[in-house]
Image (cartoon, rainbow, N blue to C red; front, top):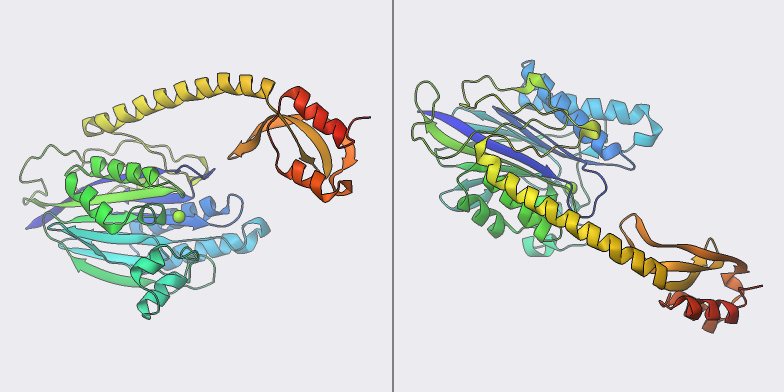
Amino acid sequence: MTLVTQHAALSDIGLHRQTNEDSYVAAPPLFVVCDGMGGAEAGEVASAIAVETMAARFAAGDALVAAARAANEAVFARASARVEESGMGTTLTAVMVDGEEGRFVHVGDSRAYRLREGRLELLSDDHTLVGEMVREGRLTVEEAAVHPHRSILSRALGTEATVQVDEFTTDLRPGDVLLLCSDGLSGEVPDDGLRDLLAAHDDPTEAAAGLIDAARAAGGHDNITAVVIRLLAGDEDGMVESEGSTQVLAVPAGAADAGLEGDGESDPAPEPAPVEPSAGGVAPVVPAGSAASSPARRRLALLVAVLALVALLGVAGVVVVNTCYFVGVDDGQLAVYSGLPWSLGPLDLHSVYLRSARPYVLLDAQQQALVDARGVRTKDGALRLAEDLGMLP
Ligand code: MG
């Protein structure tokens, strides 16, 4: 019996991050997820270098573990050469579908799962401090899932000259589904939820979209990447035996390039949708083929709704900025602000209306408490307070 794969790969920036530091490769028979870390843009760089190197070395004939070690060296070399990228690193979880076997390499806290007959099995160990504590019996899985230091890695790719790479294999059967994901998915959606979503959708694209939606609905605190690989029985030519409604999608991303396409024997995929690797290694989300039209429509509807909301907020914002004022501190000196005393991510909902030369530290405790409260006032109210605080000449 020949096994063939259908797959989909999606990555989403989430709701709280400014950049997507995850990268992935979906180029049968190789699938990789990397979740970068490091200051500034370094995490993006690390994960992009890792997927690029991993895929290139694999295509050149390296064994998986050798390709992973080469990826480690490439990230480490780059981090050592540039001070602004020193210390950067990435997770790496990869599988090669090899006949009736899945061969994995793994470093970090991205995860590999296998769904079989409704049961989800976590195949990889989390290389995190709390993961080590769970394996040593010092924490339960439930305690680890909410531990404040759960994201501290005990092992990463690219942070040292050499790395210990986990290798493992699992048998594969028709009907099995493999999931590779970053912790932006597994950290938000419990295993039961992952299982239910994978089991609910035969179409890998719908499954991947459902997983991303669930992680966003659960808070979307981190970048979210899901690679879903479904195994089907194929005939001698590697074609799917029972025609399903599913469509094979290949979405190379991150630093993936044309050299990453599969050999065509183990995957009955039509030509992958061409995807330009986006700047910075952010994995683009590109619907391809008819199977993706429903998620695409959903995304379009969502986009329209978001734009309408933004327009509404814009009008509300103009009204608010022109009617709300508060007294605060700008660079140690008292100031009257127009707008609201909050920020939405990088966007301040206020600007300085009037800056005074009076330092905050000269106020008495009661006055400081008044300023600290940043209470919203009318313009007259804020100016009266400014006068009381000795801010006005
Ligand atoms: Mg992450």
